[in-house]
Amino acid sequence: MTAATLIAEGRAVLGIELGSTRIKACLVGENPTNVLAVGSHEWQNELVDGVWTYGLDDVWAGLQSAFAALVDDARARHGEAPTQFAAIGVSAMMHGYLAFDERDELLVPFRTWRNTSTAAAAAELTGLFGVNIPLRWSIAHLHQAVLNGESHVADVRFVTTLAGYVHWRLTGERALGVGDASGMFPIDAEGADYDPGMLAQYDATVAGSALATPLRRMLPSILPAGATAGALTAEGAALLDPTGALQPGAVFCPPEGDAGTGMVATNAVAPGTGNVSAGTSIFAMVVLAKPLQRVHPELDVVATPAGHPVAMVHCNNGTSELAAWVGVFRRFAELTGSPIDADEAYRLLLLEALDGAADAGGVFAYNQVAGEPIADLSEGRPLIVRTPESELSLANTMRALVYGVFATLSLGMRTLHDEGVTIDLMQAHGGLFRTAGVAQRLLAAALDAPVGVAESASEGGAWGIALLASFTAARDTEDGADLADYLESRVFSHGGSTVVAPDPADVAGFTAYLAQYEAGLEIQRRAIDALPASRSAEPQGASS
Image (cartoon, rainbow, N blue to C red; front, side):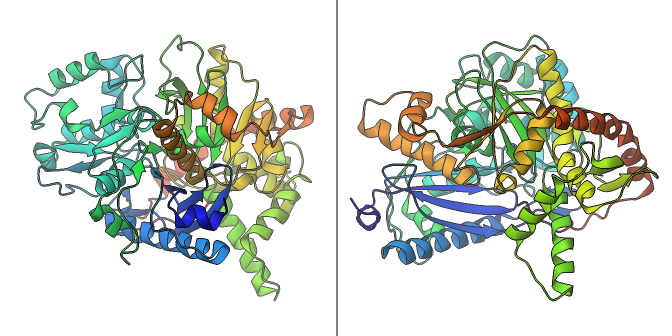
């Protein structure tokens, strides 16, 4: 069957992901490895009154723009514009806080994963539950609002994530995939629902506060991968496509977070597998074969979309500072009369990093645009620091900037190593890995483990959620396998991953770099006190 026929008959599957810097849409065929069309829309979070946020009007304007771009791409490639789909999936940045009242009105601006103002709540809840509650989790944001005595708390009736919000508006269903739900509140050992004992503990803890509704009634229902999570309503179709061409009726998979879609897109959902996702934030996910022995502030215990426990090392700061420096060099190229596009700039500059000294020659790059809990930084102060005897070259600077993307991730991964968790292979994805062999090689040095990059590595979470939507469609029509089997047999059976082993010289160089990098974090702490940050807007820069 041709792509045009698939699209015309509504047999294609749509995946949408709201990332930190781009909203992306991906259309796949009955063979989900076949990407039929794509669309995207760039956006940025804002720092408003000390809160990292996105406006909900911007959410819908961006979704409509990305969808329209996908429709145009499908028409240009195949001569057909989609008006219906076999299945749809929505993914977005995990965690954060979207709180609504009984009239479904947003009570306070969306508080994203990037905010680090919830330390008191996270510490109290970690002690209460005996599991690590990170600063960015939804329950930490809610409880911090309770501790702060915020006036909106009494009116809270529903709390969800960004993916859950968009899914709710498109389908009318207040549901989440188990992976995204595990970043709202701890889930039970079976990955089927929120932990009932901890729910009871929380309700008892806040008894007498302004919070009027039992917590479980405020949270979305949880669905595993493969379940049907509603269908596109007429109102939802009009929200996504104001032209009126899109028809309602497509089934939806459970909405997921970007961590879950990253695992799916790299085939890292079975115990013993792992992946690294590099974008505005950077995080590593390792699917656990057995529970962790201790509670670690560096490690979140979340879940795959199928409910398996995952140790997550999440760093708030990824490629934004690197992207800003690439922009500086692109501007210099313009001034010389030889402008260069972003992809070519990344390619040249990343290749230059390979000519740098293995330890970056005494140049250190701190990429913290926002606060970084793993590094104990309450706010971000991006810095490039060097010793007087260092060699300030472009190659060393670029290697330092790439090392800086991976440095705090490496600090967190040490905790997994101390737990005895072995890493045979980490799959990596994100735009940073489009230039073959550079970021992959340096990540292998940072993790001291082999790193694989698949041909689809730069497709990202929009493709990952399209795969989950395809899995739901397959489960609706077949006696389907579980998610890991489905991915192995239907998506990744052809292989197509290039694996790079760590180079001993690079490992030694990164180890030396990291030791000095860690000692130099004190410079940032002093800079936070000495240089107050603007509370109006985020510095410009997009992930690669």
